[in-house]
Amino acid sequence: MRREGLAEPAQHPERLWRNPDPKPSYDVVIIGGGGHGLATAYYLARNHGLRNVAVLERGWLAGGNMARNTTIIRSNYLWDESAGIYEHSLKLWEGLKDDLDYDIQFSQRGVLNLAHSLPDVREGLRRVNANRLNGIDAEWLTPDQVKEFCPIVNLSAEIRYPVMGATLQRRGGIAKHDFVAWAYARKADELGVDMLQGCEVTGFDLQGDRVVGVRTSRGRIAAGKVALCAAGHSSVLASMVGVGLPIQSHPLQALVSELLEPILNCVVMSGAVHVYVSQAHKGELVMGAGIDPYNSYAQRGSPHVIEYQLAAALELFPVFSRVHVVRTWGGIVDVSPDASPILGLTPIENLFVNCGWGTGGFKATPGAGWVYAHTIANGAPHPLNAAFSLDRFTTGALIDEHGAAAVAH
Image 1 (spheres, rainbow, N blue to C red):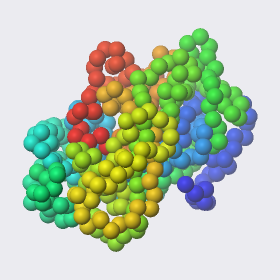
Image 2: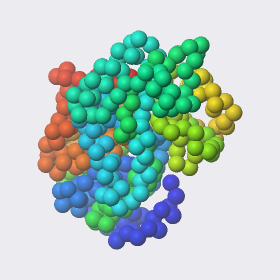
Image 3: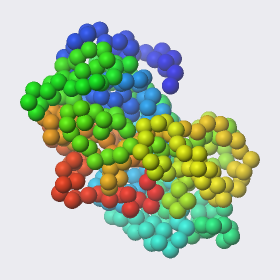
Image 4: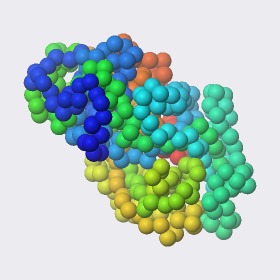
């Protein structure tokens, strides 16, 4: 992300670059300056009046997973708990441009989830019905209707995975991920939040079982409450205070093509071949695949994953056969055993955690920030994230979206 973005007006732009007090005391310290961290800071200030807040970022603001995602937004999850938090997020997305006074290029172009087998069809119909019961827009499309909605999809019966139908959420779509991050950063800054870049957390200060501050590469910072919000690395931070999180970190690969004229009018996803594609506002195709099977913090991935991803995409979209790939990358996602987030309290008093989103983090940005801010401010979960507590892994009350959402993105 370019630093020139900070040239836009802000009341305290200097707070984005340096900490004026080497040993400040904050009501809340948020560790992680990505989308969720910045959204949490904004809603703490706007919704709860907590403005003595610092966001600590090891690198630069929104330079981690927020800069390495495929921008898809949807809320058509199966389970009530997931549908609740993602639909809340989607409703916030629909008003975010006006709320943040920034054009985040939110485009509700529709999200198709393709079905390639009878089990796919049955799961898709089940999810459509579950969505409708939860008040979420959802449709089932026949193959002919798929072709009408997205003309370039290959409906040939000769392909390895013929298209047998699809679910459609018309309110789903994409947004410009870096615009979203800077919009939240600007508004949080206007409300008095401090943002410290190049500030790596190296440890925590405890009094008994209560966190009272953080140790960083720039000194110690006293804190009334500390909120972990570092995608892919929350388990490393939590381990510093002896808290074990049941998550694993994996590379998640994606790529972009050269710039093209408008050719794809929606988001298309396929769980069977595990590829998804949209066309960004500038014109490049944005494609993603599944996570790499091994654990890693590397922002790259195995070549065979990209190879299979492109083979699947070309079978579904033969028109892409002569398009050039410009760049590939790997984001780092933390995945919980049930592929649902962990968002709430920890065994350490005044230490909170937001992690385990897997591939669903970007689409949840406004909603996660909203409920996380509520949880931090009140010391108790919001109704929408109460079910996503850490203790569900001991009670067995899992929210198994891993096997229910058709595709993990």
